[in-house]
Length: 195
Image (cartoon, rainbow, N blue to C red):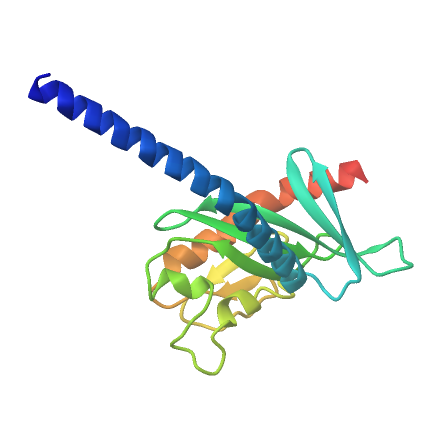
């Protein structure tokens, strides 16, 4: 057997063993990953909705909507849904909570992002702001959705539909607002037509 054939056989055996190990490991980790993703989803729903006792999950036109309710009431206290869009570096995924009439935001939580460390990542937590590191997402609570959310730079928001941009990360701040603005009407129309 020549040297080339031996190399091919050895590489084939190594590849087969590696593939088998990876497939086995995937089978072990997949349920754990799914469990942790479900826990993160439940936590995000809880973070963006007002106080509720339970929530109902509905699939409306391909969008998962989470309707928070208080026991004994048929009226929702809020509606949560996930929206995605492009940021400065890559995709940003956000859980958004709104009041039942879709007039204002009850809260947002960034579920995933790959923005610039120390700048764009402040959409999740701002470690430079020791007094209130979560000021950026918290400012969305109570923001009016229509005509649309606007971003202001270097000043305090004066109108009920405005949020303040992160200094040095204006593009990422605007991306978060754009993602919400781009998706809110479609989610609202789908939800209201289904109910």
